[in-house]
Image (cartoon, rainbow, N blue to C red; front, side):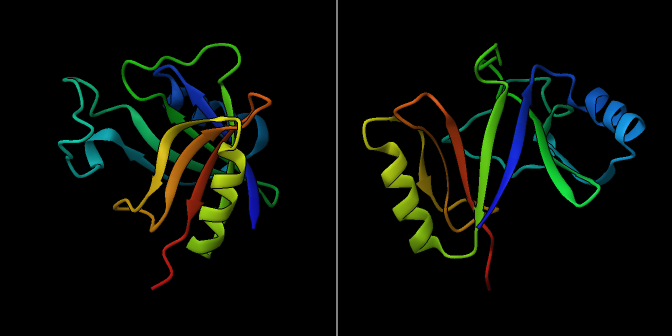
Length: 139
């Protein structure tokens, strides 16, 4: 199990990536835009968001920071700028952790199979801490 901070920004993630590359000497491990994602009728995207960052990863001195622009229509604000991403390699364990965090909390995105993960979801625990559960594809 690995824990990583996940920064959610309001449309300036590409600028933040460059800034952190310069400030920290961060190594860009990849950027995926909303335009790179397969289309889904469950999550239709508004027009003119293809350039926004859906997911990016930076490596800084052995640590990982993930970043993304918020999903259009869900702006980040003080209190939800940082989310903790828990990366697992076992989807049963991911479900168990997700359910435990959701108890007395709030499910923001149900844990489910996606095109990029066999089990992915977002939950806010009873203390208001937001967690993104990400299970690595193990095929």
